[in-house]
Image 1 (cartoon, rainbow, N blue to C red):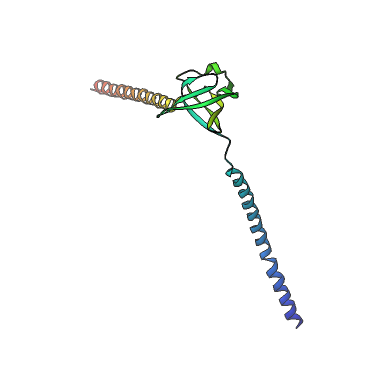
Image 2: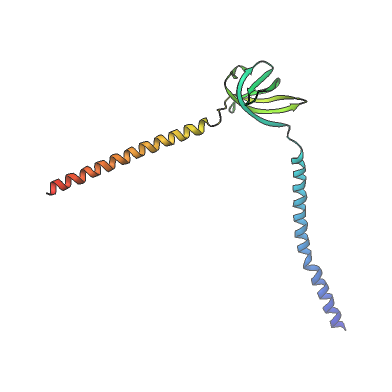
Length: 165
């Protein structure tokens, strides 16, 4: 009877001990899920700012107007608006009609307020087209060099045949 009792006690201890690490691992995963849900809860809050980009159609001390396909987009400029040229500081005078700008804006009631204006922005596609053109020029130059090498090699072969006869 003692042996049956000790076997049952060992079996119960084993049954309790084995799922315990599994439960602890599940608990850790649950904690991670709880943390991620907390993070996603933070992510559910809308960001205060959002990006904008466009060509300047008009600029004044209080308003930045950008061209759109249909109409215009107006952003209010405040004393807190930061002007940048890349990573460097810029001035309001650096913003010119026809220039491309980008930055961050925020909603203030029914108005958009420019938080930052980056005057060092290029029109989308300009850099890519320039890179493609430069790459195309390089390919053309490489092809010309290869053609010249082939022509020189052919001339050398022809000359050797003449000399051999």
